[in-house]
Length: 81
Image (cartoon, rainbow, N blue to C red; front, side, top):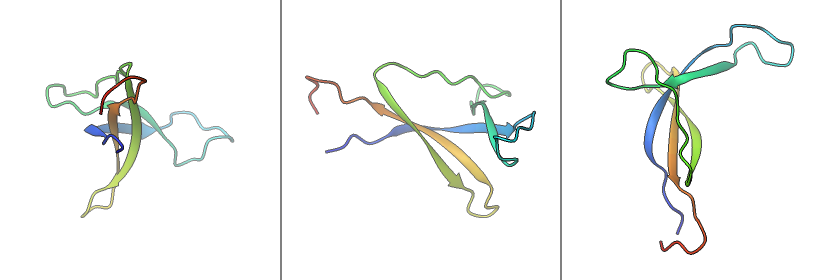
């Protein structure tokens, strides 16, 4: 059975400050994660032994796009489920 992703964290994004012909104009850059104890986005720390994925989420009333970072333990050899 696949391990579920847990501990979702909302990711804060901003428009990319410089334009490039290789980057679409509506692209965003990650500035950090939401933290209740911090007024500013905090850096994202990726821990060894975990897998991560970004998931798009749209607000049900405003339809604004938000991003969630989810993690799960990596399936290592010799690990029991």
